[in-house]
Length: 423
Image 1: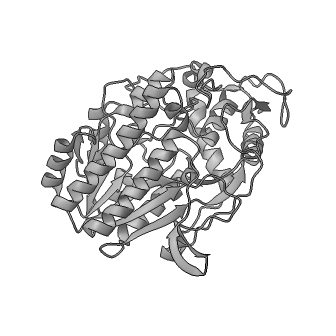
Image 2 (image 1 turned 90 degrees about the vertical axis):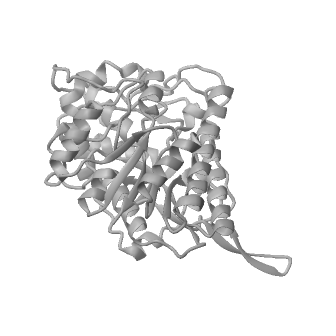
């Protein structure tokens, strides 16, 4: 996000505690794409964009740290990406559930109060999640809907039916941001983002940074690896693409380049003071089975041997359900969807294949064992291989290892910070 905004003329500062690498390491995983050291990333950023970002190593739950950053920067816009984004991580046990709630909610509260006291004209773009809505048997509006009850009408927030402690923390965030806009006169855009996938955040090979130190991370473990990212990594190393249960769960998805485009549109088009607005951010909806079939088709065309298998669903969720969310606000601002998932998947596989051995060394993290009832048991396969199954699916790739700085305790800039951008 920092690169995307800087390339479009914004001056960017950030704060990051480096928690992501600690969480992934706790899951036994690591990024499929090597992560350079902090200094190497900052040096590469400066070389590419002729400016060095102002990066603070700090925790958003520390109010003093947040206030100092706001005093130094006086931001015009804040892109708030600095929360724990994992449902499974929040469902491990009481300690993890409580920690995720406190981290996410307290961090956002500190940002809201810093805005009130130090940057009241700033625009908050908070990353929410489509998971806040759940899967109701109704079409899903963008945040609000008109309702008539006992002869009276009103415009109310659409009811949330979150499916994990993480998703409930995002619901509480949304309520807090909405309330802060009302009482403090702040302006905010709550972005209900679908599931993001991909490796190329600028959207084309020509614009993609040549220096590997500027590439994004891509996780594939059970807690931080999203479905499409995990499917691509499984294809690369010849592991089966694993569907939870029936695989008929439908969700909204978008490539990372579209996510960047949408967030930038939100930043560049702020609401009026006191306004809280909601954008549903996704390109299209798919079932998990449809996604696996798409990955398998693209991987097969590249000479890989993908297989699709069903495993026990560790979650408590509906596997057959209605799902029809609105997403009109961002197209009205100029969002132009990529609408070429095959090309995005091919680019992902091309970027992942050189790291075959790096991914294969962590293949054990691909199958889930975190269950929604609080137990830990690895999901068993429910059927035989299906789909495009040819041979042993050993995959291919480089046998070399790239030096890795994706270690706990080290800050990783330009991944999950709060960004304070000025034009």
